[in-house]
Length: 413
Picture 1 (cartoon, rainbow, N blue to C red):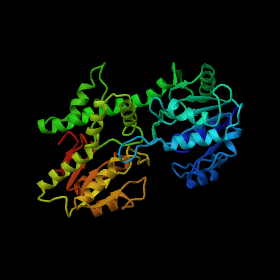
Picture 2: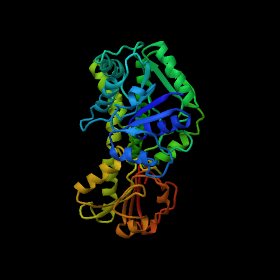
Picture 3: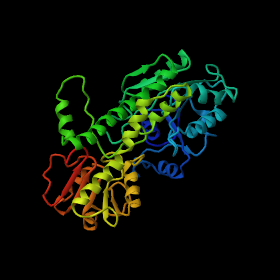
Picture 4: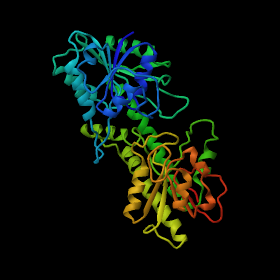
């Protein structure tokens, strides 16, 4: 077994560290968030705050754990800034720390799990080790295994999702493959080079972004044509081949789908290529919060009301159901825009500290509702007490809507 140091104990790094410990590795962690450090020291899950019973040595710097590590896993976030440009700052900082503390001739394996665009390992990561005089194959091995995780998924988790792997040398690839095959109970595919491995993750998420944009645009079109887009998709998916159903909604959230396409867009731009398709998909998906608010304005008009001066309840801050994960959530865009239009916004999400403590209080405070997350708890929403419902996830699709409730779904009325 190996000494494994995990840098970044978030949605990727923490489950990976727990898995490595369960597999018998000696695990240590590094995170710059004091709250995360204290939670893990207590044996709590830093993602949920619940007792996990799993603890391991953790610090805010790498002076102790990196020199002793056989394997270093870099699992820091790769966001975009307010201009939608890639921010590689966390990767650079984590890599610089590893390079500064890694023992020469240790031949430790360093793996970047963070999602990055093609070329980052060669142009950004490796030069930081070069700057410390460290040589691949002599002092260390460098690989990339892009993270794959789906928070809240009862079937697929970090222990059983297949992975792809790339490295700078055959020996490094073999060493990384041996480590991951002992860690993950799923196939580990060796790619021909590290740039190909980098491309896999951004392609996976751009694929989803494009398909979601397609059905979101269909939803807008079919609202004009008086066609129920959900019924059309359900009909189309009866074809047993060459169709993959995606469904429209009030927007795309999470740390991958609304972020990763920008990494490929910007990298290709440096080589003189314009990803028009990816940019259009982003434009369509980023328009959905506004479209949702337009549906609300239309529904309120039927009630002789306007958004300005109306108390509007927003159900859900998470970007996906039944988890407390609000990264890049369209709920915040919708909430901010409603406030700009003069609405008095009331929020409720059982996974966050919101304006209301439960659904009962939420319904007492508002009868105009925009549903942004399809948490199971919202099935108890009493539609008889709702005057206007804009169903941003089509959660109540197929349910009986009372005549007293003006309903708007995404792509269906």
